[in-house]
Amino acid sequence: MNDAILSMMQRYNCQNSEDYENALKEIVQEVTLMGLSRSDFFTKAAFYGGTALRIFYGLPRYSEDLDFSLEAPDSAFNLAAYLSYVEKELKAYNFSMSVQKKEKEKKTAVQSAFVKGNTVQNILVVTSNDASVYGINPRALLKIKFEVDTNPPEGARFQYLNALNPANYKVRLYDMPSLFAGKLHAVLCRDYKHRVKGRDFFDFTWYLKRGCLVNLYHLQKRMEQSGKWNPREELTMQRLKDLLRQRFQVVDFASARSDVAPFLSQAEQEGIKLWSAEFFNDITDRYMI
Image 1: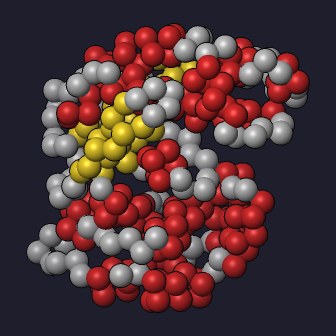
Image 2: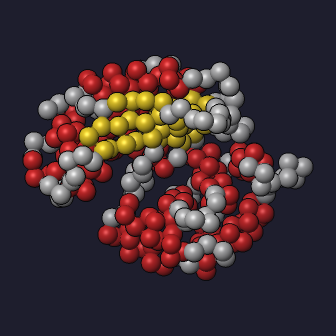
Image 3: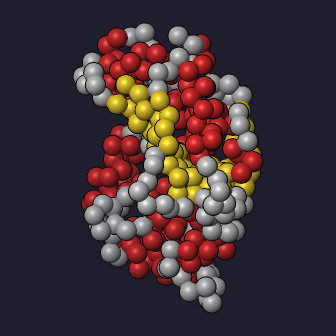
């Protein structure tokens, strides 16, 4: 067992097989990031989304995917060129996993890849406690998706942050106002017809608690790209708040709570019981800068 991975595992205080699965997923996410950092990936791309918040800012919920965006549109970008770096890093820490690009029938601006491996086999890499795998299907597959947007909207700003686990590495991320803009775009524009992503609303409250500013220009460009904003108009904070109020009125918050609850601690689950249109209107009026 690698000492660095063991040290990472100990911070989770796992009590059951589900805890071990979630811990394994996050550790593999961090090793994946470190692998990408060993290449020139972060000279071209930046990390954003829920997992970026979880790893670098302590967002108190688990997040499944790794989301990246190029700094500028590049139709020639090829994610496959970076997968060997991830494979090499996973192997160095004794993980038995494959890394493969997803081939799509229809070409889109978003390129995807998956890190895959047997859940039980790889949990035993990070713990010597065989009891940790009780109740897990021996054929269960751990799967982590990572995606790169090769046609990003303009206006994002970036920063570099350092990480220490499992070893030193540096990642380029969206800055906080640009991260918040991306989340607001999801809250306003994501299609919730079949599944309300409660994670969007949990993250929204997290940004408000931190008093985060919004990169309004980047949010406007994201909305323009989605066909949700007239480029001849300027998005203002007042207009943004009006759009949020309209959105809150049509969200099924019971479904939102059900979606996010499995990713939260018991204490955080108590907090989301207050969710309603009135709750979100109130905190938006009083906390959004």
